[in-house]
Image (cartoon, rainbow, N blue to C red; front, top):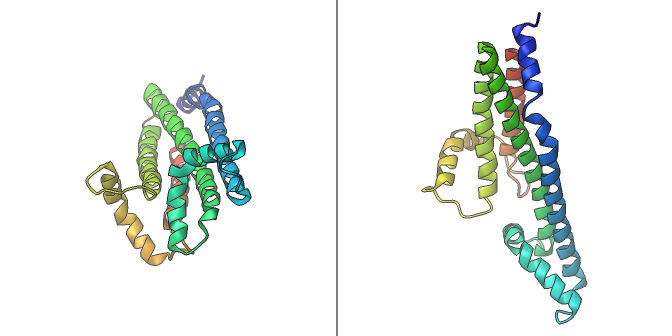
Length: 209
């Protein structure tokens, strides 16, 4: 006869997570295409093709497509008096980071839905409490991720981004006083994400899911 925990595990294993490899493939492909465009832009910026030739016109199209994404990196480099030709490399680095965290957020969302559904179906109160705590931390992680993205665009306190800022400020501001920036990068949010991930691992072990 199956125990409640065994039933919970069986229900969990056959729900949304099997879809994740398909979605991760789409995200990986989109990121790879975008990185390829940025590498082409970087190549054209150094080869400087004839703007009136076929290659030059193609390079202009690549630049036009990627400009809105590269411009924030170029602006950041300009503030530190670094050659803005390296902006595509910074954008590639940020693309990899964003894709990594985006995949983690998608997988986490599927995981939460799976565990929550299974906990409700089996009446596993311990797992239900655990997954609610886990989900609350995941929402905070999502807010930090949104704040990271918004730092490259206009940030208004009267919008949803303003709400995200007010939620995350009480944690991030004290961290920034303790942890200095490394060059042009603020690593306090990154370290906070690592700590939150460790806390989620503890919750999963304590509450048995």
